[in-house]
Length: 424
Image (tube, rainbow, N blue to C red; front, side):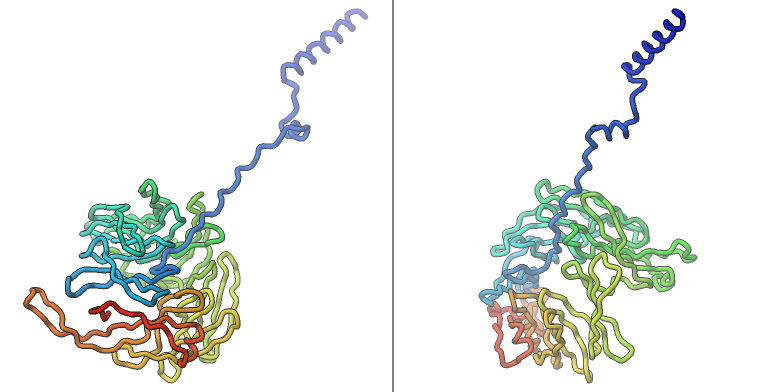
């Protein structure tokens, strides 16, 4: 009896020792249920305030022009409030820039290439006092012909190094340029024969949008590279698609949003305020205006009675072009009312009757338009100071017109006063 009691006591002591040593502790899940606080999830970063740079802001439209007298590039500023035009200097007078506005900052992009260096300048929109932010040697290229995006702290654009071999596939990247540190950071590489192209931004989600042509894996034809691009695109067409991607610059995540099959070089849609728009022809001879929110699987549609093509989308109106009975016509689609109305305003385009062109918004309820293109003979300087020749030019005359004025030719606009000696 004493032996059995001793064994029981020893067993109890060993069990207690094992429990104290941790050998008998419960699984973590059970311990969490007993009151252990769970690990907090990492919060997602707030979406970046992304926007696409435009050649205009709320105050003016900016366009580069060449000074034929002094043989240099200058910047014209078309002021919306005063309806006046001023001439401003550019940082490199002998090179062609792309000039874009981001709020109250101007940026001049010199794209560079195999024989020229790329550069980015920031300037004051009133005086165009320029500060060089980035200067790269020959062989570097900044793709400012496609959209350039900004979040206020950095610029986003396509970038590549250009080789001397036109049959080589140059590496292309989507990059972030920090405006404070002035450093370039690669966000993603667009490898392969087809380059990616920045398309716009998804403002609500803080994502960059880019398009890329994709070749099916089962394509039996190899891409042929020549003069820095694929030359046998039509041969590859049955296996090609153009894809729209959403890219998060903070996490690097990429998602496919839209795919169009065939050898279309760009999407048939235009982007405005996180919605895609396009027109498609109908069997009855008319057209349909379609729209599709980013991330949505279906599109809305409105039937139009006339065959038109999409020109531009803005906050209040959508502009479309048509040619009823062979006559170029601008159509104004009021987004709030849903009405489609032809504009009666006409202008001359290289001596021929045509509809006006809308350049950009010029403030609430107004637009900057090309009101006329008259023909003039102009005496210009040749290669030497004694050499002159006569050129036929078609100077553009601009006007600021209200929304009502687009549909009523009796409502006067505000012609912009050109600087003396400038006609184009």
